[in-house]
Image 1: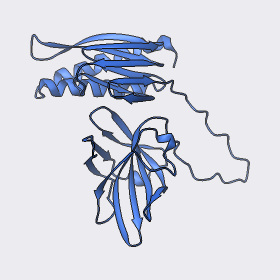
Image 2 (image 1 turned 30 degrees about the horizontal axis):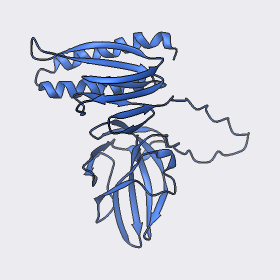
Image 3 (image 1 turned 90 degrees about the vertical axis):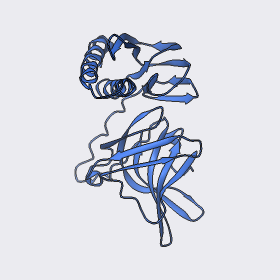
Length: 261
């Protein structure tokens, strides 16, 4: 999508979500603020897939490339409003000066995060695979792991034992055959039924993750978007993975089922 169209799309997204939030009269002010930042990020990434997005309130420093910026005052309890800066951009750096949480900031795209410092990279659109030669059956589809952090939903086995858990990677593109930076069991007496359920857990560092996988997701093609997940800093989409061993440890074979990224 050309940069010329970005301001129009961004303005339309902000207006639509602001109207929806304002109509949610039963929500508290904090709930409205959190809904606004998360929904703007989700819609920008869906409608502007090559753009990174940052929604922020408060003090910050930034250096964005090819940035489109809009300010919005989110109506709360009259006459109160909450001011947000919304950026859509191709790459750059950002530092939050103050408290985090969805009330004050939310972002998505291709990035590396170190505390309140975030570096964003360009988001390439990979070319589609060439058609196979006539008479050749193409191999099963695979999910390309992105160069950003994420959480794999995994089922593990060792002999007759079965468990399920969350495996966190700072760089998902390096996940295959490598152990995660953090892991937590979700179920220890069998494999989790991920589909049609909300699964949640808290890593040792206190980071809580919740993932919702759509009913019937196991029947979708590999790479299909089939749910939503989040922690205190990010909203992720859930993607169907081709079930296969991601890594092994202490005799356990850890199979990836879904990726939250």
